[in-house]
Amino acid sequence: MIQFETESDRGPFQAALALGKQKVQNLIETHPDFYPMYTVDGRWKHEGPVWTHWCDGFLPGMMWMFRKHSAPGSAEEQYWLEQAIRYTKPLEQRKHDRDVHDLGFVFLSSYLRWYRHSRDKALNDVIIEAGKTLALRFKERGQYLRSFVGDNSLFIDIMMNVGIIFYAARETGDRKLRDVALRHCLTTRRVLVRGDGSTAHEGLFDVDSGEFLKQTTHQGARGDSCWARGLSWALYGFGISYEYSRDPRFLETAEKCADYYITHANADGIPPWDFNAPNDTRKLVDTSAAAIAASGLFRLSRLLQDPVKGHFYWATGLRILRTLCDEHLAGEPDWQGLLKGGVYHLHKNLGVDESVMWGDYFFLEALDHVLG
Ligand code: GLY
Image (tube, rainbow, N blue to C red; front, side, top):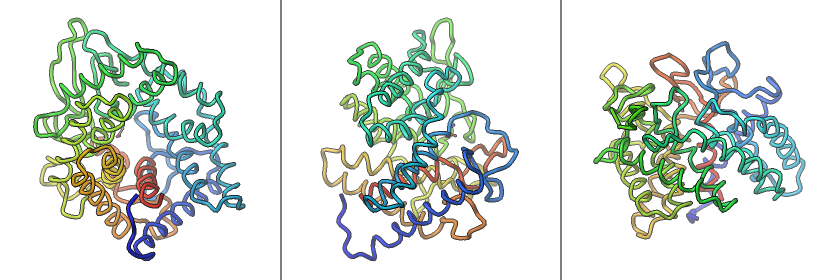
């Protein structure tokens, strides 16, 4: 863990964590048992559509982190423990959800944190079941886990979810599960990660022959552009896949994506919503992509053999985190999210320049890395 020179170096990070606790406590009190996705004018509760159902693990995930960052034995710790369990439990039924490719998002942020806290085997069984369900999306013709939009579609986002299949494989010793996860990563690496380390959002296949046809996008600017959050999912997700598999190709890919991020983000470490955004939206940033990248860089920095590069990734993560704390926190009480400036889906005008649940979650996870 990084050594802070003085207590005041930690100050902004601790203040951001405290603000996060405040915002989430307000949410619990104002809208009990509600799992938000993105804000509209800073408010979590609204009639806006969700597009797909992938975010429910992030709110309990934040609560598990708050419990960890409360004084042991305190009333505060007890409060966050109770809330974390209350918001995690209802997700169990999602372990059989065949409609989404997001079961890693849902369970690794929530049930895995609960299991690590309690070591109750029944909780681990839930995670394993979810991993097996996700593996059912595997297409032998094409060698990938299909996205929620169709059999012919592979998303870069799935790199953040395939970890739950590696996890289930490790916990059960099931080599077929591990093989599915490995093949998905290899296909994603081949068809969605470009030579310069940039990524495409989606790949389309011929379902009959399994032939890869083309790169395209839903949330990015164009099929041949680099959607910033997709790149962040890739740099983080290939890092996780390396952690589970120790396949050096995945570490190499994670590094390539990280290097692309670092060399193409704005000088303060925050990326435009798409690295090839057209001029009229070029100034629009996505802070959630920055938060994911910061947390992913912290994880990657610990995996690298080269200490100089590891230190560089750590320092870059810190720079991103400092910018987020200095420029993008929602200090005003009537803005209900923690981090401003996230973008969910620009083309559908969902959550544009707003708070987004995954932005708050990965921002807190990045803080957790540096606060220890
Ligand atoms: N669907 C995942 C994302 O918006 O990044």
